Length: 149
Length: 181
Image (cartoon, rainbow over all chains, first blue to last red; front, side):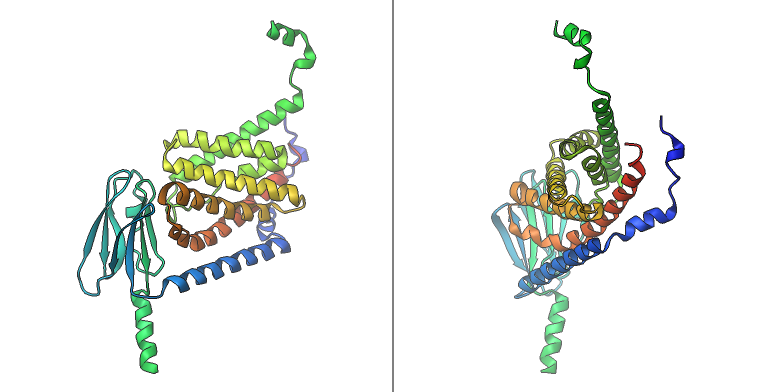
């Protein structure tokens, strides 16, 4: 039996107080976010160089590498994985999984990715697609810089 | 024979404190399984991102019952939870197990090394370990491409937010339970 009298009813303010955390908690959060931001920046810097190219992998094996088309051309890649064929679309807009034999379909639900460093993966089928090279947005920036020079 | 001896010897019976801690562990486990199953029904922000609500129960088990209870709770929660959601021995199960155990290891290590650490700080570290553990599992067993780690920064940012909220919830619940358990 729980003695209700010994346990005062919770106040709304108690949880808000917990949510604020201590000074040390805030410092830890700041340091973690700073570390993540630096990691993110480092990754973007290393992946944004060169022609935008889509790489399709099955585990350690590179199955295909296609530069992103600059026109309306659409490239379809059928990558054979552990469960079967995953169909990948590479277009001017970016990369996306069209279909996959996995049960969860997280890969197809992830939609289209167009930025350098974008990764799409079908984990059960062991297929990964990586987009390296500057994206269309970054290209615009490069052209603009060239004009100003 | 052994049973009869046990029955005739009252000292062989489990103590009330032991029974109480087992009952507490079981209630934490049931809540953790409930949260694990509930979370699987929520719309996800990304393929590998979950709020990690069940980690609240691991934190509480660590605070009230100790490191062994926290480890066993994390392990049992993933196994039983996966039975309920139908992902036992699928890639999701192994990724989930790697994340839960990594989080439990980090929680226990920090709790032992820094006894005055707050639950929010513990939860933050556990959330980061959970996400990193999942990615290491994916890279080692499934994708085998280090490029998969490029996905980490945005997901770690979300982990920090969810870790903070879970830590605050665990802190609030532990304050409420202190007089009871």
